[in-house]
Image 1 (tube, helix red, strand yellow):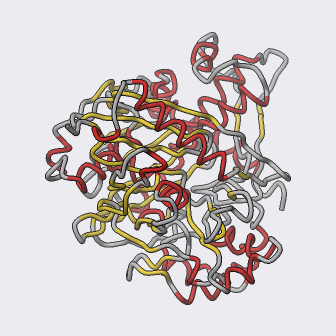
Image 2: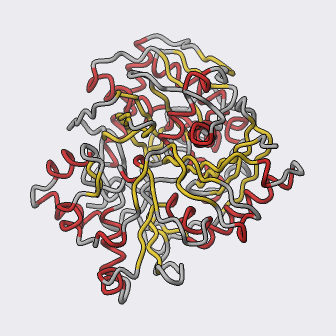
Length: 496
């Protein structure tokens, strides 16, 4: 008898598998970290085989932990780090190069050349995106131009391109499924969000052959089935969405004006804007939220490149904490950051600055500064960057944000959410289940496989775990934000 939905949550630093029941309760979770590769300054890569091996290990172990059987799984939902690209050989399934990660800035100069040619508006109007190395197109072009023989093979149709969802589906299906969904396609800078097709003009602009592209499908629907030799059973792959859109869905932000912020490796604020795209030149991007039942919902998004990754830096780079959970414990040892500000622009800055040449700074240090101030300032940087994006979103939409839904790993940090509420001057709501990225993928899969009849069914699962209310006044907020913006101004265009 079928009981569960399995979500594969392939993130920037780890691969996870979470098994949910119909009520949205977590039954089992397994997480496997994998190495980050930094070949040069500003370059970030992953080994696609490490992504696959950690992901398949996580999903097998998650089922084994509960003594489950594969025939108890209704289906598999996939959510993934977006914009990261893999190019592999169609016959052998072997990647021709490491995955180039969304954080990678190696194509900054290439994108600048395109901007100088006046192509910003063309790309924004077709894709809703900014012309930035963050998105997939320039990364694919780099692989084709810099890996020996890659372009020739691509022109002959011998290579496949995909974002991470596509790579996982290819591997799960034993090479039978080469597909993606609307949400991931809309992050490539090659997909026309109005016509819902790969755009021939953009493919020609970036020099990418159409033959290497995956088929694009709605986010909820049957993409294919896992190969029984790989998972032990043929299981429907029934829901796919990029991590931030999956979190929007998992937070039940089904109505225009609903918004959420996910504190993951980066921080991503998305607002549902309904069934018509709104193209803006404000520094926000327009993206596809999901495609279901023949309809497409759109979202406005503000992207912060470094959020939880800054805590990982404190742990692995600076070695001032032993685990991410320690950050709250140590930050509470001081009443504030002691005037220290950290701007974690490790790979440039996203919204609202969009400066690939910015670099991180620690400023405001005095003789009295200690490691607790540094840890607290790093935590606070997540809230400041979120506030920057919300301010921009309010200006762009004319909608006053009255409350913020939050999720992601760092949302377990009460100190962060309390400071976030203070700096925004509004309530911050954390759901009982903060794994809303995986939950969104499970819900999309559940709709496709008949577990749920409608989004109203899904809403019945929603439960708020904690609410944080502001304790500071507007004068305090204005002073804090002014100081933050002053700090940011010091790090812009540093490497240009």
